[in-house]
Length: 348
Image (cartoon, rainbow, N blue to C red; front, top):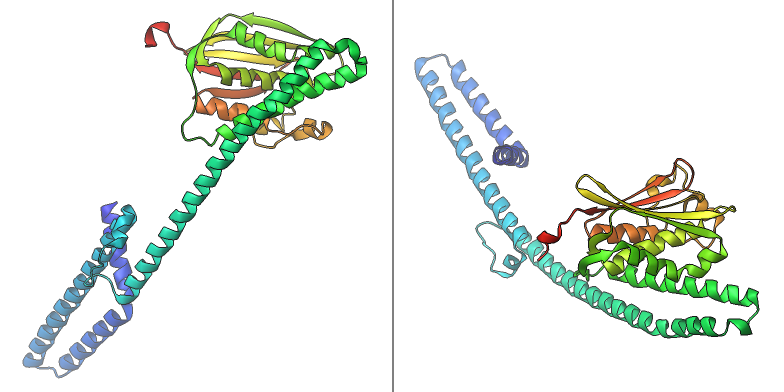
């Protein structure tokens, strides 16, 4: 790298002073030719001495300009590596007046950018605090709605009760999405790693979606060869809820099914959530984790936001997990989360 930089600097010096060096060489050649044409020993010696002298001058000037160029390069490299050096007194032997003026303007611009950055960070923090406060406050009316639906079912018509239950589940899901979406930009994550029972986590999520699962005639199957996983419980429950929600949303008309399975795959522990629904077209499959992507199924379902699987992918990345999606051969969609294999003796 250093050799390449030296040659590059030499080339830059030659380009910047090309006219002067060419004029010097032309004058050298012209003078040598004139002395040589005199055709005597004295003129030949003078021509050789003149060529040697002008050659030394040429080399001296070139090396001097190369040295100044190198000083400027090192100085600017130092400035780029540490912006605090912009505030010190500039070396007049290295920089011209125009270059010092540029440095001063650059320093002022950087200060403006830093002030603007601080303002944006403060605004983002305030927005995050507001979102969390809003989520906390909105949970109260949602809890009242849930309580009312549990205790006043006999006072409502089946149709009204069905719509309210659907709205209740959707509200809870949207609130969770907003909360997790706002937390993605946190510098310090809030994962609490512990041994989590897969059966308990799955049961908790299914309880939340119990009404929609029953209403849509979706059955549940479990094949949990791995009973416990070392992970964050809340994040895992959110991932499971998004998978269940998608399975309900993209179910087929006939009787649906969601299958939960866990198994070892080498040094990984895999959690798989699959269904027998519509699945995803092979064209859309590589993009299912993109933010806002709904695909052909989303075009049919106008309520699709394309944010659920995006959040699943981001949460998985934050926890250093591998998240992938496939279509089932028998039809349907399969979401696979790969956890690192951890032994209990390794956890302090």
